[in-house]
Length: 133
Image (cartoon, rainbow, N blue to C red; front, side):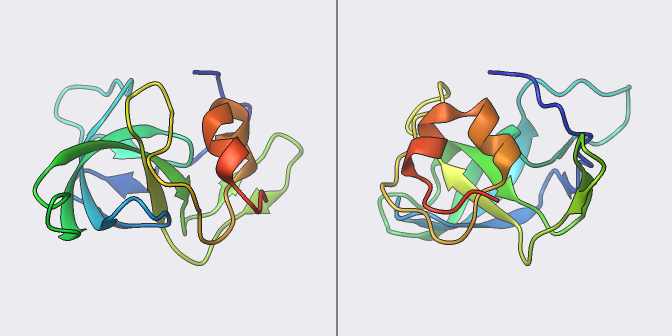
């Protein structure tokens, strides 16, 4: 996992429900942990674009429901600042479900754009993406 150059605002706290934008079978997931995110004691963890999260599937195919899946946040509504000074935000919050925590996506088709920071950090996700913003 590569470091991100942008200053990404972490806008999705624990218990946030996020739509998935792939064809993995999950439709709605709930974040319950953010991998590699250290906070001060008592502070709630939060995730931003490019972060690896552990989530439970709330809506989707029957075999996917009530399972724990790793996922990557690919879009967020809250704007964040890129290294060149531009600010970017998306229409919705979205995630991609993974097969394993190494970054291989479970789905073969992504709906909507994927952030450039995700493509830099997760090359396997970038291969499947059709639009990178």
